[in-house]
Length: 289
Image (cartoon, rainbow, N blue to C red; front, side, top):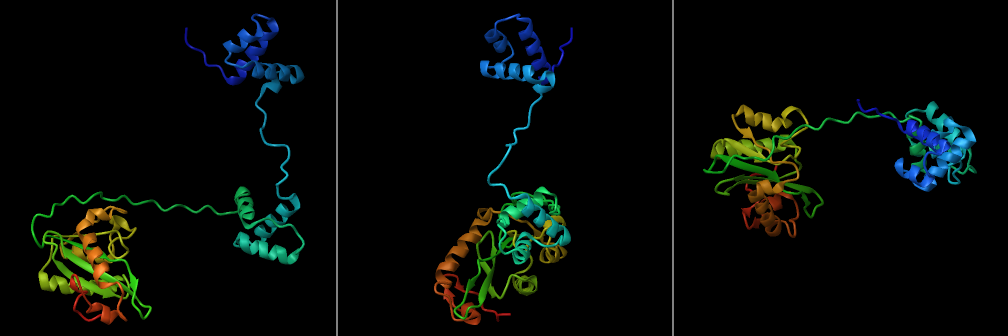
């Protein structure tokens, strides 16, 4: 004989029927149905008051809420939003307070909740997260085969301008190929530095950068204009994983020395910072773009 599935409502009706027939004492009957005595009496009382329809689960919503926003204020907020669908909670409140300065208008967060609850906030489609190729696995077994590249964290020179040092290192020998202070991380500024280093030292097989804006994007394959240029030169861009700077640990170790020896305190301006002596000799020797 196959098993028969019973719903929760069927079990409650069966419990009431068995109770009314007096087949078992209440305590034993409640145990058989997995009920406490208090819950058993609750269903008995409901059945006596309203019959089987009263055995349906009732809403647990409170009958009243002393902190609820008055209905007239809710209506005013919703009407104003429908007339101005692009206005946010802050602007809506400002206009409503101007119309009725004595009104007990709710907080901005409450207005935001009201708009969401009544489907007056357009739902934005989340961007799909592009997969990452994973941890770089190519071993560094010979010089000039794998370079690492990164922008050291920006800092201000004493004239208030930002300096963004771009550093290139040979991964095997840890030889510093370039250390150039730039005005920003823009590709148009970074590409000439790579061009100069390629002409001086040749082309590596792989360049291993982080996921910064110059080296990676949210486009297909995470390719930036700079990494597409590398591929055209038959250089493979091998990104480290996001939030894992230890995968370029040798490069990060260089940045620690650079920060300690050449940026504390910073120089007066970017040209002076560029030729400042430090533990790595100097932050480059080429003119500042």
